[in-house]
Image: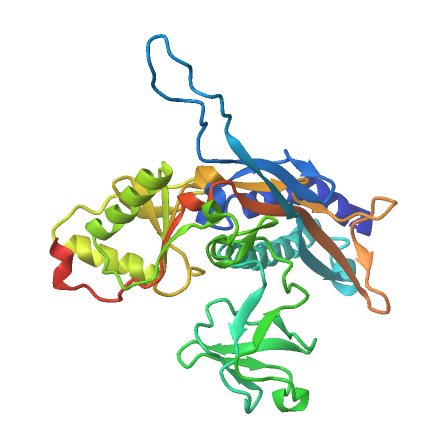
Length: 391
């Protein structure tokens, strides 16, 4: 007979390993390339020394002259709080009892819950990976939404039905539909009744404001990083080009050359939008270039530039192309994904006053880039090919 204990044992012994692998490797192509580590964890924080530049104890001199002054490598102290990442499943008491005498039905029930957990977790991990850590999802364009509709300024790529968004006032909106042509978000709540939305305001993932991992956009655009301000530490600033560029081999190579010459950075991953990746494929076809394809860790396939994967990711901002050295990134974690347990080791707990049980998957982690200056970004890649592309 299937019992609550049977369900818990299955979650711990059968599904946990599969879930962890899916979330660590299969969630996103970039995430799969980033190393993980439990080193440098101090309490609730990541603390590590990041090298700045090179050792100064080198030089030339006379045959019998004074030797160069010793000067070791300078280090900066990075301090970053581990972020709390959660995923939840819910099983009703009725569903559990309906399968207690049928093992196959019970397995199907758990499989369905796991698939939904993986789907939603992969979406949010991918979104956070390219975010800025603030949890911002959309920017409101109009303060007078109608028919449970919020007008959005910019893309709605980070929104999907079922998400719960939160305004800074604390008012929450459950997403029931997304119009990706007109950039509208439809909600279950009447927006007029909240009377707190203003043009220019942001909506965040519920409870996540300023609590997400420091993603790629945060490394480029945040004014401070790992406890240090960029204004006082110029070496923290990645290289950014905000003027319009047209996609070509020369455009890509220009960025690679700059990062190699100025920072000694060997870029091994290019992340962009799928539209820009298609544009690069058009460029290669127009000039009769071979389109090479590679398979990345995690089973992801993509085209390449001189062996460097050019990956189209739904969560990269429009018109943007990132040039990354994944060897500079580490996902520091207190532990791998675990089920949240109470003192008795139980992971399935009844929701007070409801006939349902919930289990929570948890991981405490933070993404750290030890060499921000070694990364590059084009923020205005033109959406068309021009005659300039034959250079």
